[in-house]
Amino acid sequence: MPSEDQKAKIKFDLANANLQSVSRAQALYLTTLIVYICVVWAKFLTGSSAEQLHFGWLELKMDAVWAVTPVVTMVLTLAVIGTLNATLSAYGAVQGAAVALLEDDFESLFEVDTHKNVIDYLVLLQILPWGKTRKPIDPGHRQTFWLRTHHLIFPILFLLSLGTSWWAIHESFSLTQHLSFFRVFDWICFWIQTLFSVRPMYRWFCRFAGAKESSDCYH
Image (cartoon, rainbow, N blue to C red):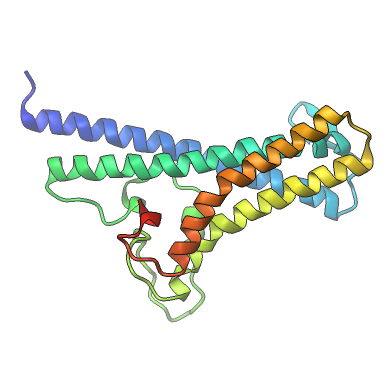
């Protein structure tokens, strides 16, 4: 039979492996969403929407891209939201396992997340040349107004994703005459994305407003 220390080590390893798998998935979905939004808007704003859009071996005309964009942005946005929720639970499990194994916990998710994404690094950007390089801390710690602005990154991304979906529906309907079924389906995808985006955006806005660590927006 394994000893108590061995059991604690096994629990920590499992919790950490779970956290890393969630982190890898979040990095994949988040990067894909950002790249997709950037490519679609770049094609539109540069006036090259009449050309085909290449996704590896797949070639799509822009009217087809507009038609599928509400579905793509919905799936990717919901995946990102899901990984945010999963990260919170997984990090809590790692903290509990660390206390049992090491009799100490981690100051920040940044310390144990070995698959960081672009948002993790944007959070650490600083403007003042003479300012000391900040250590990453969990969002629950009280911060000044300017140090809380990073809480707006995800809401801005979700709003941009929603805006892309809405504009895609507008462009798709003006370029081609799709069947009523596809129009309804695109709107359903848009509203599903909207409904599931409200909760995380509300939570991040509350954090930006200076909600206390005991607030529900941190749990």
